Image (cartoon, rainbow, N blue to C red; front, side):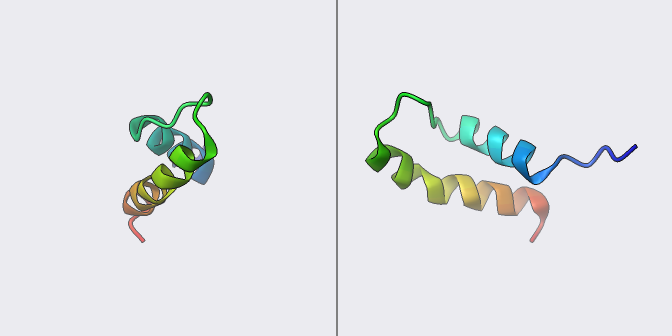
Length: 46
């Protein structure tokens, strides 16, 4: 079985780590989106 975390799992973890919560307004979410993506990219080693 493949134990590598999936892109979605990584994205979820990074989203959580960057403090993105479902109740946030769009402007706040958009501000954090870049941080989340950077985190995910770093984890994937790309």
